[in-house]
Structures are given as structure tokens and as C-alpha cells.
Amino acid sequence: DKEKEKEAASKAKANVLADAFAEHSTTKAKEDGKRKLSAVEQIRLEHEESKRAKVEKPDPDSPSDSPSGSEPWLTAGLVIKVMHQELAGGKYHRKKGKVEKVRNQFTADIRMSETKDLIRLDQEMLETVIPN
Image (tube, rainbow, N blue to C red; front, side):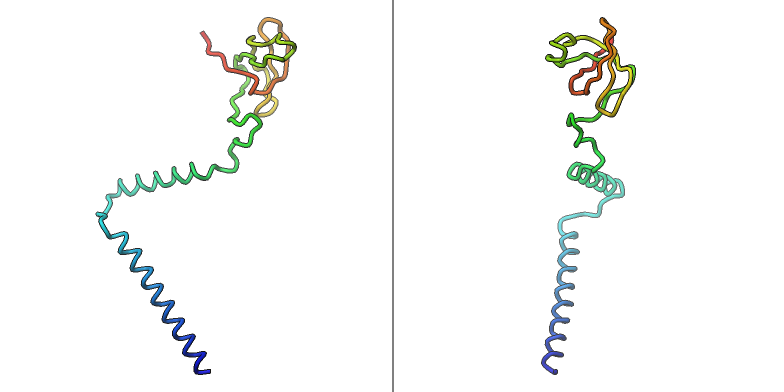
């Protein structure tokens, strides 16, 4: 029993020493070669760290898992150009239309300007048009 008590006591001492050493080495590392930061510098560093953390860990609700691999940009009333070459044998390729209704984030009903046809397309088949 005395041997077990001695082992337990030596382990406790070793843990206390290890904890003290770890604490001392971390505080010493902070003090080495660094002056005290002003409040503005501390805020700037915290802001940079939070930005880095956001870049490294994209948030799970982000649309990166979307079918088009980009953010949704379709909105009603937006003038677009169809860029899908095979759609209806190329009938709508590079033709302008207007978004009438957004079905989900990435799909919309498009009213074609020339033919007045109503077609449903995904945003990856479309391109925005800069108005004159």
C-alpha cells in the first residue's frame, strides 16, 4: 500500500510540475520580443483572426453545395441572355429574356423578348445583361 501511495504522490508532483512548466513556457513565449499591444492593434488582430477562421471554415449554410457551384443571383425582373447552345436546337442561344418568376434559388421562368416564349432554365444556362 505504501508503494502505491508513493507512486500516486510522485505522479501528482509530476503533474503539478508539468502544469507549472507548461504555464511558464506559454507566458514566457508571449513576453519574448513582443511589446504590449494597443487596444486598436488588439482589435485589428482579433478581426484578422476571425476573418481567417471564416475563410478556413466555410459556414455549412453557404450555397457552395448548390447545383451550379455558385451563389444564387436570379431575381424577378432581371434581364438575362440564354447561353445554352443545345436548347431547342439553338433557337434561344444568345437571345435576351426577362426573369418572370424564380422557382427555387437556381431555377426561373424566363419570358423571351423576341418570341414571347416562356421557358424554365437553371441559372448556369444564363448570363446577366448589362442595360444600355
